[in-house]
Length: 96
Image 1 (cartoon, helix red, strand yellow):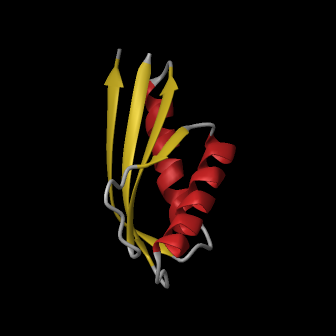
Image 2 (image 1 turned 90 degrees about the horizontal axis):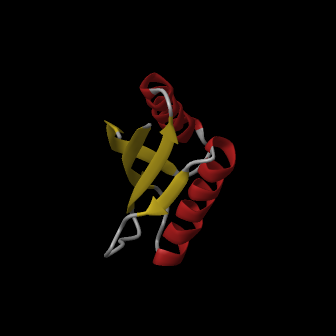
Image 3 (image 1 turned 180 degrees about the horizontal axis):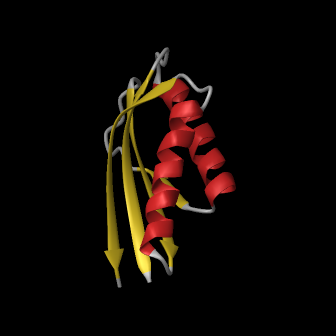
């Protein structure tokens, strides 16, 4: 079994309040859960309106499949029509 984790650091454009940030992050996490059937969470402990950290985890029997899923997730987030950009992404795949 292979477990893949992905941490996305995002910059949110046009968010003036935490309510605006929460709206964008909730829309992103819902879309990722629906499209990729992955576990998604907001990782920010002390949120600011203009940035976010989102964690994604997926499990599969094949490590190449997990890597492909994580790559597809990054590409999907970059192609979304939400007011955000991916600043960095860190991924890790562990075989259990």
